[in-house]
Length: 165
Length: 328
Image 1 (tube, one colour):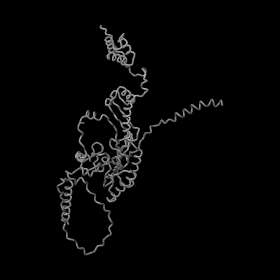
Image 2 (cartoon, rainbow over the protein chains, first blue to last red):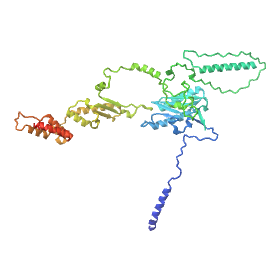
Image 3 (tube, rainbow over the protein chains, first blue to last red):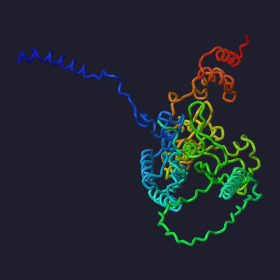
Image 4 (tube, rainbow over the protein chains, first blue to last red):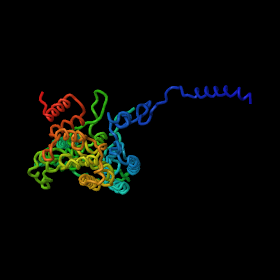
């Protein structure tokens, strides 16, 4: 026991030292990558205007893709709105497969949801009209409110390219 | 062969020119778009005596012709509110304006309106042009009633409608139109619009407590305990009515208010009055008894309620001299 009495304070100081050295003292780890694109060696990565401007330019060079009042202070049902927006985006990119050339813009006004996007003219207008009706019908059933699609079409995918990096 | 080629070339040039003219010119709505018929090349048909085996051609995928933008066919004097009747995302083919939007490096032109997602994102007011607003105002004018006579100025309608009700409506982009904040009702009233006697006013102010602002003289009731606005409004009016009528009720225990409970010195119920009367009615018979003058009563009340200051003491001295009929 006497031995322990001698050893304990030393062990304690050792432990304290160990705790101190466990502090992270390397370079600051604040690298952010999301929404930013790496430059390729051939400089052939196509970027749209939205992709060319990183997220910190939102509100300066580009605007938000979702417009609603839930994000205001004391806005109601913010989480549900965010989840619904994600669902709408996934549903539209899946339904209009390989046709959507831009981000999907979701604007909410009172109980209406207006969805805008840029679509490639790769399918016939008949199919496009069918898909518009189909998307509006299903989404309005799920969201329990009127949904309007306001699409713009481009002939080629390259029309939306802002620059190559 | 050469003549054929030149003719073909000429005709193609002519047709492209015509198309260019047609696309660049935008006319008034009553003018007809002129369309030049293409002159057919009259060629002799070739008689083939030897039959050539038709090769089975691969079916080509026929891409349907895309319509040119609608803006090229718009008349310059068209009814814009018919083109853009309601709120809608920007569409370059329907807006005949050379818009540009977006940030570029110095020297480069901003991205044009075609395939520009930034223009589609921002809310536009193309459906709220001044003519459209005028048109809509004209349409709803038949539902308006004239402003009531005799209520032209604020002072006039304040006198007729002393009660002010403040509620808030919330517009938001949700499937529901309810907002719990909308239930709050605030009613404001000037205390001078209510009629009281001294006891009732004192009791009313005690009942309403913090709801009365002494500086502005405004009485404010804010109710939010009921779930709907209607209930809260009714409750606020009930509170006001109940407080007003309750203030006129004198409970039996109110008579037992002793001198220690008084919040203000009153000359009428104090020793000062009795002393003054005793001095004035020294050796006087019952009929000749007089009460101290009101000026003296006022000065005593002022001296005790407001505290001793130069003015109050001077006034008190003057009144005492007057009461005792001492001339200096």
